[in-house]
Amino acid sequence: MSEDRTSTEAATARPFGTPSTPGRAERDTRARVARLILEHGPVTASTLGERVGLTPAAIRRHLDALLADGMIEVRKARTPQTRRGRGRPAKWFAITDAGRSAFVHAYDDLATSALRFIAETAGDHAVAEFARRQIADLERRYRPVVQDAPPHQRARTLAEALSADGYAAASAKAPQPGGGEQLCQHHCPVAHVAAEFPQLCEAETEAFSRLLGTTVQRLATIAHGDGICTTHVSPRSLCGGGDEETETHDEESGGTSL
Image (cartoon, rainbow, N blue to C red; front, side, top):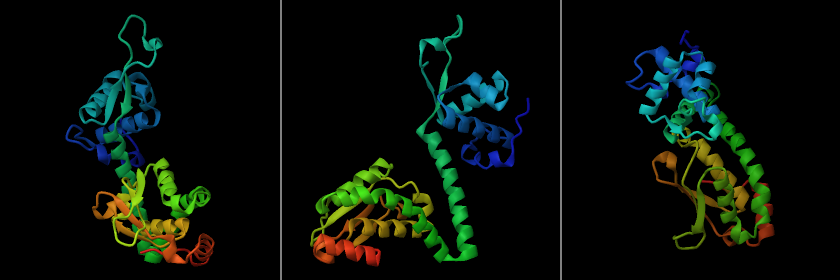
């Protein structure tokens, strides 16, 4: 059975190019096995072999290498029915956090390349417009939840909505004189891309301002090497007075960013 793979599959193989995979065909096949485990796992070796078209010995070699590299792990049989006759129970293979991260970085590389192409062919303003359009869906989903909350709880409500989307966010009183709050995000799914294209952070900051109806200022970002993304949220009383006036101003101006 052949282990040759297409160039498309090879594009996702680079994160798995470890010393234990000397040949490109090996890397390509191993990446495909890992991707199948990511998408369909936990899964057995026999199922993987059938999907990829490899002999039991070949699939075992790739699984052993992925296990050694920490990309996958063995799970216990999920039910008693997984026993096959009098033999050993089937092993189920699942992706690890390290394995999942390897694919995430591969997608980051693709996104960065795409934005570089946009910048080179259409200019930085096109990248900024792309970033605003990307964040628009998040803003539409969050707006009803945030605006239904009392004004003094909106930063916390926004943090809860962000956490539900994997940003690990929280809000607290700001330590700076003058009051306000701090919105902290302990995870950023686009940090590697935003390190080169800060327009992504800027679009997010603008959206926070519109959602909260007040001036916000980004103090730190994971993309720039900080431990967390920190945004200062100014008191609404400093941005127009009452809630109704602030919200009207917000709709007309589109909020304030850095």
